[in-house]
Length: 223
Image (cartoon, rainbow, N blue to C red; front, side, top):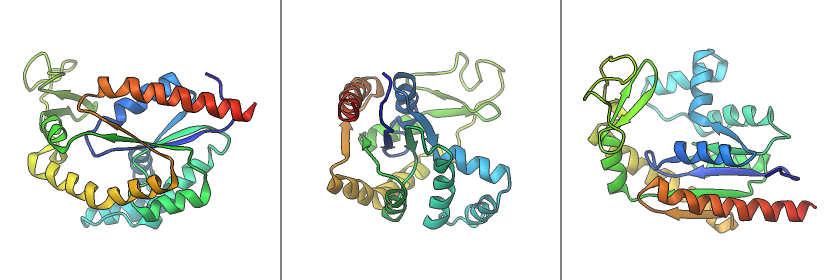
């Protein structure tokens, strides 16, 4: 589907809700560019930009990256795509960040993946990673051919600190307190669309149908 008007979307959901998978499917099916806040942050830290160094100092001290730093980094990347339609993943995480995004751009829709925390805990604590390549396995639905070993290199898999049961519980709690108000913020603006379920493959057809309707309507208004 070609777009006659720039369309801007945000995807939200707790860690482990399938945002990455759904984002990949969206950009394969629709003419949107995927912007991952995690990728942008890692690139800034690696390139040792001024904001990247500031951010690394926060992370090293176990502090949250301040809202204004996060907003400046992400908005600086979005400005390079002023004439593009995009899907932002992993930002905004606080109401302050949502307001900064709103000041710069009009967000057309916010896709919220509502997956029960119990499902996420099960999913994340079953996740094992091959660190050098970033390949991720799940002992429940995508296990390695040999237990504990990467399919390609045969090297050992590790469970990232982020995926241990205690950390997962803390991350979900933090998401709830920080990001729930952002969902409320977008709900009050009438742009929030929530998709509830326990399996990405079952949630995806609903997201796809919604975006087909939404983008068709955008095209009709632009015509």
